Image (tube, rainbow, N blue to C red; front, side):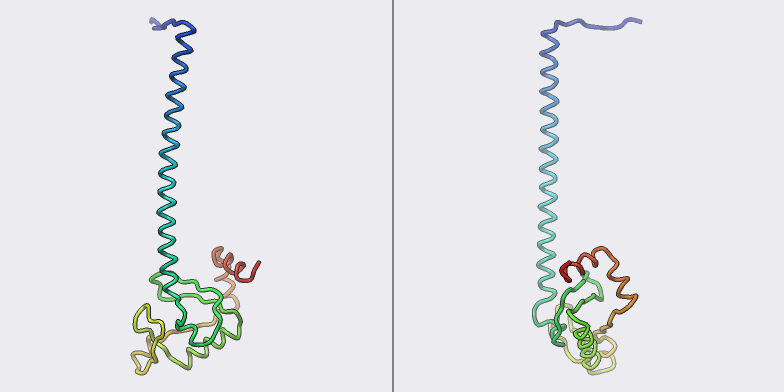
Length: 160
């Protein structure tokens, strides 16, 4: 078996090494540039998506919504788009009791998803579709606030 070795001068070797390192450097720079462009594009898309979500959230809870009919102070609303329910944290237990009592005494329905005022439920069919409000206490409330996202929001609300 023969080995195919070539012998070159030190000067030629150094020139080839320099060319190799230049090619390698250019390749690294190209990869970095492509990655940066991709990353910036992804950030831009996420930013646009978050702006759209924020705009949607702003329209979900405009002033004069059904919650404010009961004259309560809302601290936090956990709402997921297209979900049939949401969680609302109020500033005090008294506000919670006020809200629950209000909706028990004033059966209210929403005629459409973005209905800000609602209307009184008058017949049996409407009463079954009336907004339901439930006070979370004890273990049920503890379980809800154990979720990391909810816990972070609770700490923010309470100024921790």
